[in-house]
Image (tube, rainbow, N blue to C red; front, top):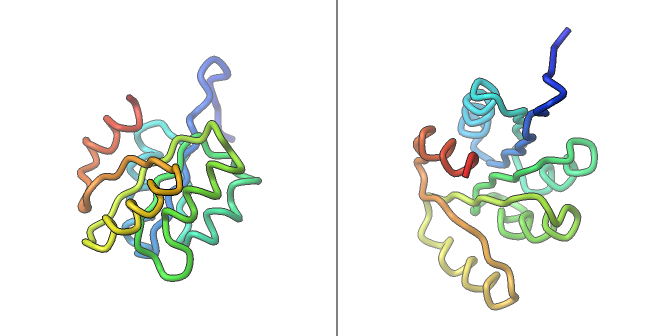
Length: 126
């Protein structure tokens, strides 16, 4: 049985990265830091998880096979307008994708991979 302090429910964070080790590691770090984190391994799975999980924040890799993190972020914002979005990437192609999203009126914050857990926690708590 898990106890949850009803005065301060845990913030729910959905992590999407096709590199499963990264997604799982971030989920472990965030869960240990007091968040309720769940890892998924594609943009499509992130969109599927929105309804049931109702995250307060989506953290997504940008470059993934299938749906990109930016596409997932745009759909997330449409479905859950109050969900914060944080993208991260280790690839140069990200800049082009972000520019295209900006041209369509979507603005996202991005962190460079590798993301240090302390930096990520600071962003989440800001």
